Length: 137
Image: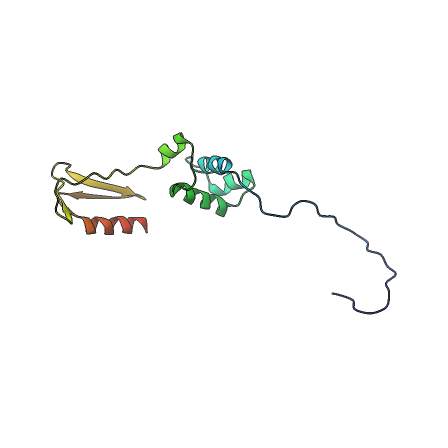
């Protein structure tokens, strides 16, 4: 509380603190972020433990993991290939706009979060898009 009286004080402060440092935000180099993300992707590792070890917050590490998934943060090659599966889309043999025959390939199999979707025969591209959207959600 501010004292706004005109009477001068005769007491001096009992304790004084001097704060040093920039007080600003910590800058994380991309290589360090990639190392932390790679460590957090190892089997059986908890993100909060990794974050604590490096002086970061778990929400930061989750954000960096998202950046890595979206290709905004480059991970070391051995980590990226072990944790992210590339998707290869081939031209369908049939030129029909919304249907492709899978008689040569046999089936499409999509696995995500413990769910496996298998589609045999011809597939409607719009149905496929809806399935992928549902698995992402």
